[in-house]
Amino acid sequence: MMMKTLGRILLGLVLLAAGALSPRGQESRSLPPPQTSGGKPVMQALQERRSIREFKPEPLADQQMSDLLWAAFGMNRPEIDHRTAPSAQNTQDIDIYVAMAGGWYRYEAKPHRLVRMGSADLRPLTSGQAFAKVAPVQLIYVSDYGRMPKVKPELRDLYAGVDTGCIVQNVYLYCASAGLATVVHELDRPPLAQAMNLRADQHIVVAQAVGWPK
Image (cartoon, rainbow, N blue to C red; front, side):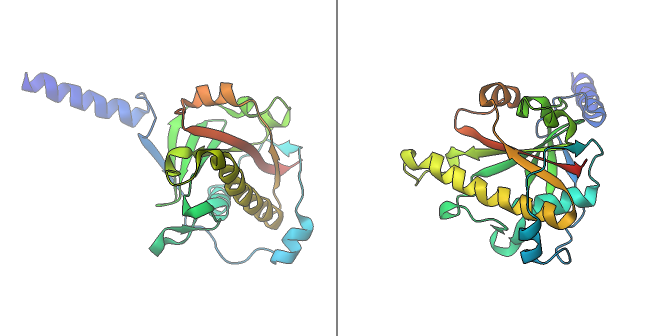
């Protein structure tokens, strides 16, 4: 019996290393430390901020992904777990899911990494427009209403929208500073939520495409 149990454990470790087990929460992709200095001045980034819907398919480098996610909603005061974007009552209800050709991930601001959630390419589900399949990155903003126990139910949609809007603008300004293209867009939520296996209290707000301008 002991040998059989040990065999199952070893087999599980082998499958996990090979990525054959369910990826949800099992694998993480470390990101390099974000570069928090440099870039264009804020006023110049505001001047150059715009929506671009034509992308090249080339992926972002790891450093660019790191800087993008940190700018979006990373920890800028890690000693007190505060972020680069505000949230109502500091609920920090927004999770950023990152959809790419090779799979989809959840961004964890602390310790600044991507946790692999699945191997499917969810980008086509984020929009019916052609750019959804071309942009190398789709950021999917999901509000976890379970983190809003003190917020009145009738206000949760509003809070989620405002919190997401702050993150969206951070991404726009980072992309303007880094020479990247981005656009925030509507989407058909139910099919994507089903593919992501979201809970009933997790609500997709919007998605935002990011990549190199064509």
